[in-house]
Image 1 (spheres, rainbow, N blue to C red):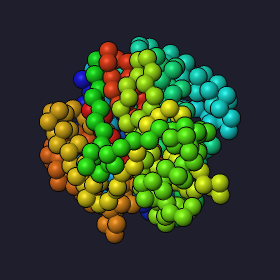
Image 2 (cartoon, rainbow, N blue to C red):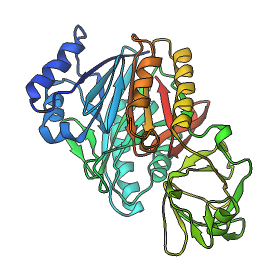
Image 3 (cartoon, rainbow, N blue to C red):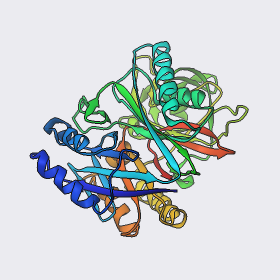
Length: 392
């Protein structure tokens, strides 16, 4: 069984004060090298040196990413650094990092080598991969998830893409390993031993979805070109999202729901996809792969939808966790749908979860979570607009 202890600080300016606050909260836990710390923080803690100072003060590695807000038991906030220390008598941890070359073949080679080396350090078959992906790369989250699934023989992959609130550029998005933060590397943790993780997902409720589906008949990676044998624009016009040959304003705040073609060993559970932009050719640029043969519909997304779906997941977490540590991520798109109060969702987590629960919640730019696991074999998926939870 895995145990955990959480800590936080708002101290950005003075690394020594921040480190002391964290260390005080981790007492009376005896800190050892065979632990691992999952960290989330705003980019300010990277710039100020707080994150690096904390990593140097701890005997175990920190792994994680930047985020815009976090929650742990009894505390939620912006401009916050949180850490969840994981430790166990019957589980092992090994941390890895890989460069992210621009071409897919280079990424495959880099991640394959890193995975082999990290797996050898673990010394046993991993039961879970916690992965943290860089934001500003030419690759979709699907590619990372697919590669990790392939290399691990479909071990569950859970995690997120680094987030930042810098307007337009998101230049502060970083993954973390030890005292360093990276704009262009994947960091991850392999966990092996006596572990049976459980996963929970919330994206669009049935009530928010259109009652009918189209079929993707033309696409290229994340580019949606055709639905039902006609241009994507025609499909959008048929459901009221385009008119007179033009997409309606604000369409990029409306998520797609995609059910992939069923393949041997994989489920057909639908996943949410963001619509990022419309090209001059009226193609839709989406937040993940849109394979030909997939079914597609759209949903409506607002504050009530975010809070109601998150509340349902938190209720399941309370029922199932029973003291087990829980790591949760929510999409930036969900945060943006909250309007003027970006802390509504994380505050709700603090209110809904028991004060003595063991959890950490942070925002992400894309979510990694299995849609099903049978016999240790996971259907790992990359999601947008989604709230995910992993019960360790």
